[in-house]
Amino acid sequence: MRDATIRERIYAFIIDYVFWMIVAIFMIKILKYNGLDEDRIIAAVSPISFWILFKDFFGQGIGKRIIGLRIVYKYNINKVPNYFLLLLRNIPLIIWFVDLFILFKFNERLGDRLLKTNVIRIGYS
Image (cartoon, rainbow, N blue to C red; front, side):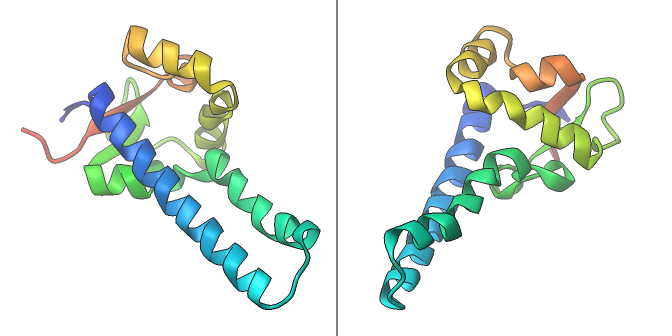
């Protein structure tokens, strides 16, 4: 196993983002077809925005699973952090420009640095 590259991490994020945008667009189309007004549609679709916080439960979101990445503790790569730590790890995505800067500077996100987690490539020898 090795640390995930910045490119792999960004690809995984893009896959997650595209997947959830497709889900959101699909939901909006269905809700509009059923005659709901815009306020109700926004209320129905806005929980998708929580994807940022909950996208990595079980140590892998959809993008990480496709790319072959997993979130682990920095000092115990055999253990996936608990749900609460995975949730806390994604909160800095709200200030994405800071998170992106730190990713490019240190090859880890702010959440990884604060919570002592790491993203690794699984199945790599």
